[in-house]
Length: 126
Image (cartoon, rainbow, N blue to C red; front, side, top):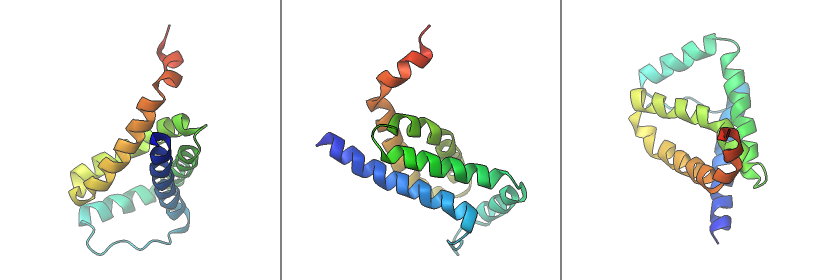
């Protein structure tokens, strides 16, 4: 039962990351009208750096795909963790209303990391 719940949560989180990554390439989601001005300015500044958004979008798509499949889920959690950290910091400083979704994604990724901790141990052992 636990593995089924984790699968569904990882599927939903993975699809959210894939959607966010694809939007960085195709720009099909409109900017919300109630988005704080600081967040809009930061997004425009990031877009000015030509390589940054495609890089983040690629990492989001890759991390989302890896999260969906149980065989690659541990790698997906590590790949998506830096992007998730950036999302957390951006929401703390500019748009606290988005924090509940961010905390849900963090909880899912942390569950994956804790559930797969034995796969990470060889990286930190002598």
